Image (cartoon, rainbow, N blue to C red):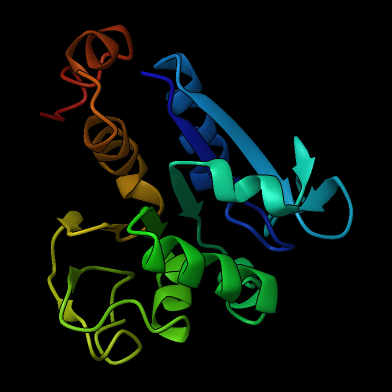
Length: 184
């Protein structure tokens, strides 16, 4: 079962979220590529540059799941990018999986894919995510959406992504000492 995950990166992306997501998905032996929009080198919110694997193109439609990390102004830059809104709508209309965390969740509202779906987001985002059913949970999975709150919730978020893709995370959690850190 070959699965493919695309992680979108815009200027101001949250480095801790983005790099951790890619790292853990790759540790699970799931194909995961980062996509940027103008240049392969993308500056994060803490002035760390990360080179994207690919420049955004139609190949992304072949992926099983798209990830929208947060960051300031990374989430806003994703939300204001018409290519991002278009691909999120494409994934929604084709019942593909969409994952977003922190300020990346605001893209879901802009793309009009949250209506009557359970979701979560950064602290205080209840109004920004109106139309959805906001829960104050670390990770929420409903229908084709996986959402999470912020940088400290990246591990449970990425483990949920891996599980939803049909993979067991027990061995990976053990290798990463996730149980030692208090995760379940």
